[in-house]
Length: 131
Image 1 (cartoon, rainbow, N blue to C red):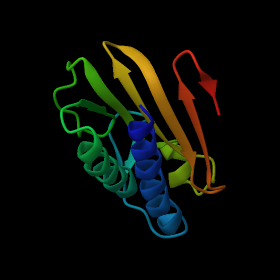
Image 2: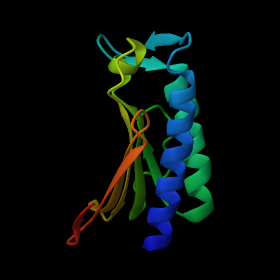
Image 3: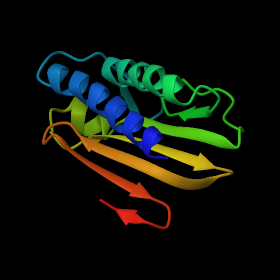
């Protein structure tokens, strides 16, 4: 599990680096629902995360917020919100993060939350606590 956790931290940091680098710039913002925004950075971040994690977890399903889902019924599934807090991000508020989890048979086992603007990450393991 440590190998997967390390890969998830790396993927979150890579996606967060993109978010941080594009934070002050112009963003392409669209709506995926009445109140749900999506930016070009959401989509690019999701691609980065999936590409990184598929190297470490090639057979896992993916449930991703922005449409990169595939085989999400697999017993091992990556759950990804590439830019959790898109509305804040789109409006220039620095409170957003990258959220990644691994579930086995719908039970969350590991998770990583990365806040790019403070360069802080938080991890959790089922039954072992959070750091």
